[in-house]
Image (cartoon, rainbow, N blue to C red; front, side, top):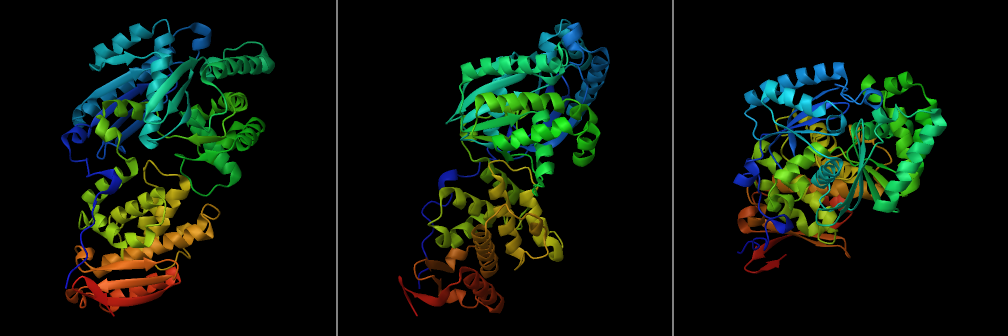
Length: 520
């Protein structure tokens, strides 16, 4: 009687977990303060550093750059609000034990006549050192923020702030190429004289010049910044898009043009009522939408993707050692969640190898999602049994996870839902019509039912008790059991195995190991 051999590469292409490595734990309380033209935000990152969790996240719409185009100086009321925010942040980071504390200031402080003076005042008052970065450095950090979510991202990053807009070319391996800055922030554009025609001409000329330096026809344009996210939120509302997650939201050039038209003809109050976007942010959206229209028109990207990760995450990325940068953000986050919340940390890896024979023909991208599902399959075990499937679905579709397209996010959520419930009818998944095809929905169900059986079959290492063999051409599933596993394959386990077979539309057979061979 011989159980199946252990998997030859138990961690696969992702390597052993790094979240407990000293190089990763050193990043468990990194505070980043971003002092922009419109807002000041402090984020304290925690936990799985490769896919950052937000221990603390607070934004103050200070408006430092308001009126800069006319005065050349920081807004007086903005300075008062900014100082108050920085005093509060200084107290908070002490209480949290955050280290390091990294504060950066962008366009408003670097270009205003009194910017350096105000920087010195804030440092003297709070003890927080502030680095004023130039536009090219701002573009680089924003591009690195995109890599936090998309390690293999290629294309063009476009980051809009209150007073400036930055562009950066990015390529494989986390490289940042040409970096440019421009005066196309909506606060700056408020000072353009000559009416709508002059404004349109100014934007067009600046964007055309940028295109000559960064090139056109990129496969993907990554949008970073609050104004871009607000426009994406409006696009979701206009289209009736069901998955309310901005990160990795995709738009076509045509959809951007239609949404810009919608914004220009719709009263701001109506846009706010429909989307819940704040007044300060929404006031900049009409001007920002005109910039986006020209960016898409002149630079001609094939696809537009929204990134919730930007300059603050780029600062975190700057602190990461290269081995951590090279890790997959989704898998690292799921490993961390399992270690923190699962009943048996480590079982997800064993479960993955037990059900892997069903999915060997799938792409590496799909296997990554299957692995993520196995790691997350038990993290919501404390939820009430009647709602555990919903908690699992929410943990995938609403969690702050990088490295997921919307289709992958929903596939992961549906697989986890089926881990605890036989049908998605009457669940929140039914509100997500149109994102997954019927075939993808069936594949997600198979993943869920496979996890449901594997988790019930054995409480420790399922491969020490048996293995599954899948013959796709014959649509036949074979379960091979060791002698000591016969009692494990009880009534409930048999029922869940049958449900898996039915989801596969397959025939099945249960066999016993005898030596190195299986007999019926």
